[in-house]
Image (cartoon, rainbow, N blue to C red; front, side, top):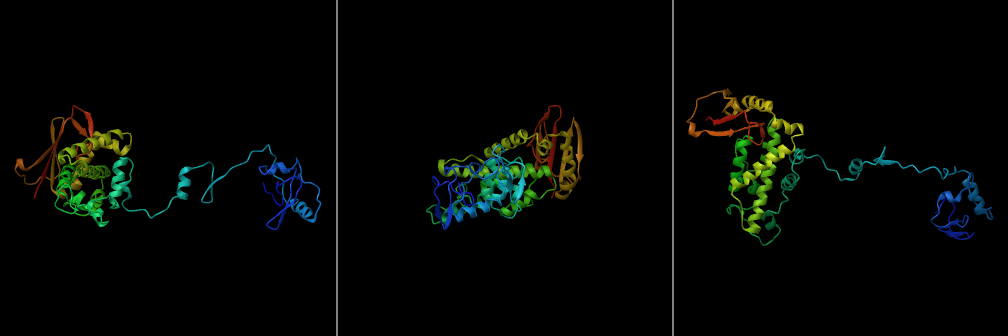
Length: 344
């Protein structure tokens, strides 16, 4: 090992490399440590026999001896010039990783409680990197560009997930439980805006989970149709989405935001919220029956024929979010029925 002016090179033989003189100390091996070149209180050097060795001795007198060999080495972890008490993988990753500005859609794709396979598909779709037929055709691949699910339009990302008849059928089921947008989506940005367009944290969470599940299952059925010549009906796909939503909420009920979807008091809170924020604005009438007593909430306007109404039942009470029944049973003693009526 080289130390200032020293090298374990051979028995008492000086050597010249790169214009510098290196000396052997006590026939040290190349693997020797600095500690092998010192005694208890001084450098273990042979008597100088040349001007170069005298210069070496003089230089070493200006250097403090290394610590005694019975003292352990001390390691210090540093990340971006900041000392750490111990190794921290997160701090190390923050130093090493490539950085980009925070995207305004990040909380729609990556959020606590998201299902990883759904979030990943949503992330790739958000960047428009899924190998849709229109994209494959743009690479000069010999594939048909039409959508395999409807066979009437080019299979772009926005068409496949938002405009296709098959996708529209699935979204219709979702909108019935997550409060529909003013009009159907035609662009990806409209989907992202709808997910965030609510002051209710619970409703926004449901929209995130549902949108990711829809994107994942549409892509799955699209691939199944292309590779296996088979695709499930939209109603069957939604039943799978519905089951996944309930499982996601139930398995994450230890998290506060998810537990609020299963709380009886949160149900009534959502009644009040929907009444103030949505019922009057969108002219939606809601009726609830709790323990057999009918409670009417919101503005009552001229009623339409009963057969034109959409009736949704939660029985036994699937306590949680009033916009849908992606919630789990709390008690069989309570039955809630609410009537969604759109008034023109």
